[in-house]
Image 1: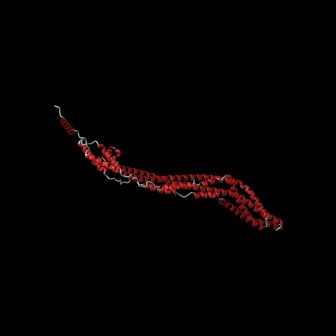
Image 2: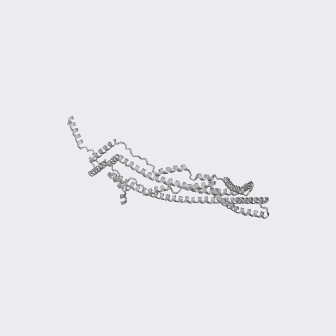
Image 3: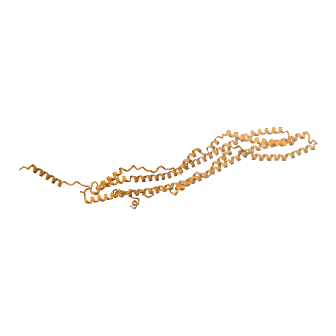
Length: 476
């Protein structure tokens, strides 16, 4: 008997009830995992309202005192140019021809002085003994011309001597110039390195402050990211998973919720090392490099002043000539009365005392004596000229030698200070970098320990010896 439509509907409803009762239940996330996902969602929504972090600090690094000092010295050296250049240029302008002219001028000055001296002597004796003054002055003028011609070779000899001396002085000045330029460069290099060291430290300090600010500003984003990384591996855990796995996932979620709610912890340790005491000692020696020893310029100016000063050179020529001329004049004054007395006695015996012949012979005698004196004086002038030039040359070279010794002593003292400065700077830099390396490692340990509250980060740190704290790595 066929079923009625009502019966078919009843059977269809029973089948649907059976299917719904025996339908398999869909997997469901554990409550702790659901709560964790909800907390992550809330965290991400809260991050949307956070402003972009802008560091309020000043990242500009000030120029250290050593850098400012080096810049000032560099400008000063540029303005001054190469040291001692004017002296060397002046020495280079002295040609042998010009030096011969200078020597001739000196000879003319000496001859003129001698002629004035002889004229004064003539003015004294001519009236006293009734001599013909004009004839004597003519003799003196003629002798002056002859003496000038004889002194010409001495002028050339003196010019060659002066030219050779100035060549030696130019070589000395060049050596002193190279030493001074070397000292300038060494000063600037060491001051620059000291300035760079201080600038490097200040830069590291400012960077550490900015990094700490950025770490704190990024902390909420980083916490949310770490929280999400912690949840992802357990998204497959559901109510149909083994109970042990569900419990383990729940425990991890508890730890993760505690970790994500942890406030930011600032690093309390020192981030940047202090400059060691050796750097301070190096700075002290840097000051000594700037004012190391006496200046050589006064000595150079004194040598050059005597080279260009004709009066100073005449000061070496005149004393000998003056002394010899005075001795000859004194001898003539002592001899003159005796000769006149002998001549008077001769004519007295002849009964012709005071005669015209007596007067003529007397005048010739005195004239010959004064002429002989003048000839001897001119002869001594050449000798005195040579002796004075030799004395001047010797003293100039002794001054140059003393200046060279002073320059060597100055250079040696500078090198001692420079070696001490470099030693302290290198030692201080080495100690600074060594301490800074330790501080960087300690800060890295702190950051890893701060992240180790997350189970997955702790696992990564433990599985990577390079990320373990230094103390634990050493223990292993």
